[in-house]
Image 1 (cartoon, rainbow, N blue to C red):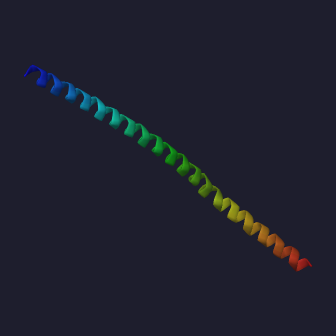
Image 2: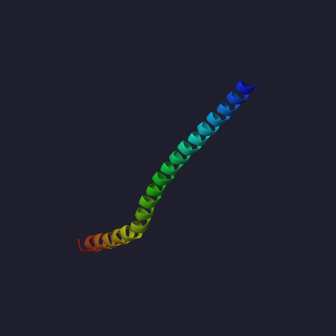
Length: 72
């Protein structure tokens, strides 16, 4: 009877360690993926902030071209 209890306890300890290790590995991978997505979002936000400036510059260029075409 004692050997069965010992095997059960060792199985329980192994299961707990394995489950905990799996949870930790999964959490690390999830955190890594979240960090990568945050970097992509930051890059996108920088792009979105610069677009109005580029649009304004394009408008100015178009007006200058129109003025040059009128002179010709």
